[in-house]
Image (cartoon, rainbow, N blue to C red; front, side):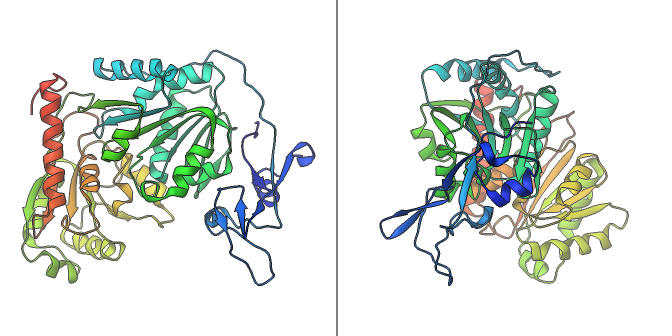
Length: 434
């Protein structure tokens, strides 16, 4: 295993790679004086923050461990990779629309720097990347696929390992470090802070998701990790207008590969919903609708807060003692295991926060968004949550239900956007019916 791309503190090398000999490594100050401040050489932020002992540190990238004016970063010189043959094993086949975008994305690398693949949820964005990834690896290029969300990283890592079984692919995020080298890396965006002018291609999945969307530090991390000639590819089902305007090339795919229309959310009004939720239970009409959904599919139920999650789970379990259910949220220690168990069909009902709104695929699931009018739910979040239904497998009449006491602007906008994507897909002949 070759670890040549990362810039790490000595203590990080000792923890992550205890067998590595740092005698041949390059060494640079972790922070350098810049006027009245200190420049962090990991994240590029200026800091004037000082500890009582008198030295300075960088609060901006503290999530990766403290870096200060007394410490050093160590890294190994980058070696040019030779061309080689890369094996892509994938049993599927790109649709005509997917194939056209995949070909354009590959050809346009010669003339542009930034690219946006705007494709609806479940459109097969990962598979569209396969030709570009294969070509880049064969040409000796270094690749990072990154996302703000751990669950997205875990899912695409599994897909890449299946599609490129002979490649050494690393997975880095706050809950896991699976090392295989620095040529093909899947990681959360924060991990890119450990690379500088290294990658030839950085792909940012779910580019509009928190925390990347609103954090200039993470935007800079993606740029700093790239060589000056490097390329950036953005992936999203719900990109903002600014990104659409600023990229060099934009590709739009309004349909899923299986030619079925996107499930349009149905609104289930419950005028006294908040009163029931305050008591930790659901109205009878909601329970009745949940029963109907569970007769046909498993259910992914989104709650607006962690505090509500377990109360609603307990209430549902009393109404449905035979139903196997569980909850999952960002700090759940068994989060990864529960997602895999849901994917394996070991649960009938998974209650979750917005942590699973993106990048996670389950077969045979309907979706409920509880209290869809809650301020935590943006239009994009509602579209993404609705997009968990009917992503793959045989058609099972999966439904999406927005449960609310009022019809908010984000709810209306989300439903309209899904309908518009369906109409556009139908007009282009990409789906069979709406």
